[in-house]
Amino acid sequence: MNNKIAVMLASIFVVMFCIAAVSEAQTMKDEGLNARQKGIVPIAAFTASGDMEKLNTALNEGLDAGLTVNEIKEVLVQMYAYAGFPRSLNGIAAFMGVMEERGKKGIKDVSGKEPGPMTANKSSIELGTEIQTRLVGRPVTGAIYTFTPAIDQFLKGHLFGDIFGRDNLDFQGREIATISALANMKGVNSQLQSHFSVGLNVGLTEAQMRSLISVLQAKVGKNEAENANDILGKVLSNRAK
Image 1 (cartoon, one colour):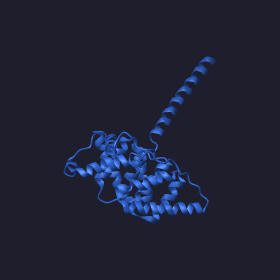
Image 2: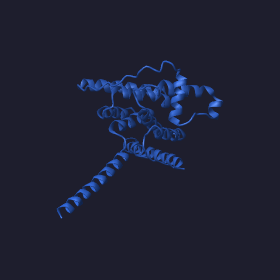
Image 3: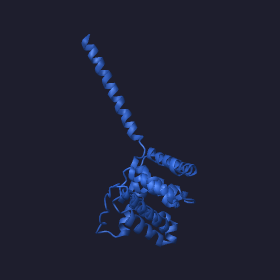
Image 4: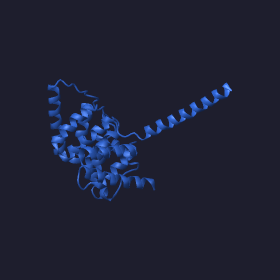
């Protein structure tokens, strides 16, 4: 009798262990962005729109969430490729002010990793072509690049080679920044759609994309979040076909 009870208890324990393991795996699968990744969203969005007051708040919150100084610098630098030099330079100036104020308060933020040297045996265009192909999932061609070859060279050599080739912000962080910026800009839904796809290609999950949109909803605006959600829906629908 005691043996039967022991076997029964052991069986119950095994079943409970399995349920817990499945539940934990599902939870991990459904996790959204972490605090540092969430911090990137409003920084990129408000740099792109030029809202300095909200950007100052976002910069402080990003540092408090654990983003390093160099990671935030990298986001602000990358923004010039999507929102232009004026927005990027204004964002960098705002960050300088934030750092000065935090320094006066005795706050010592982590500098973080500096970008490593570029690959010595490859040109920017060669490196950028490899990175672009990896991110998009295929070689990128099209009529627009045939019509204006210079833009193809700038995209491959500068955006994907010189900028995305810097290793102190990973591809996921860069795509979170890009998606967030585009979501807060008018008339760029085709680019937003492309970068949602790239985000998924570099390992961001649907749950993380939904988390990004939740941050947009809370920090940026309802309309921007709804538009981003519609675009993500199209991307997910296309990928399911």
